[in-house]
Image (tube, helix red, strand yellow):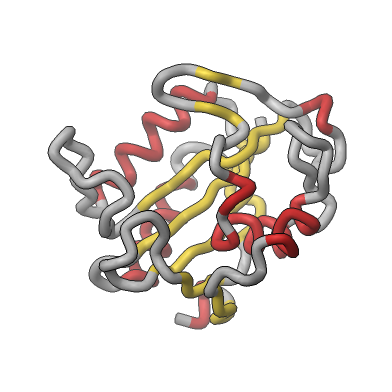
Length: 175
């Protein structure tokens, strides 16, 4: 399975958290590609520090629920509070979201998209279309990728949210 992940951090050494997250993902599969890093304003709860965001493409043999569990372990190892007392959409050292999954690496073929709807995980990610900090890095990572729900190109969706504050900073290796 080929999974597009969104990574973000807005606490502590944000670049170090992203690097640690990418490094830890290698235990869950093969990291095939990384987008540039972007700085973005927080959404939903705006009174918190600015985020660093990026996307990654991971090839894995894990099921989507097992991959999610692995990502949660990585987040926790980086200091994220995953308890029920944690503030949803609040500040966090590392966040890893499963955005889209494909059974085969055919980013322009909606027929190979993995679709899942459980209480813990929905694929494709339900808020994918509203977030520039997700869409723009995905467009950089895979320009031919389409939204399997609508058949629209991810880059077209990214153009529709370009009014959201987002600054391209460069490659993670440059931080």
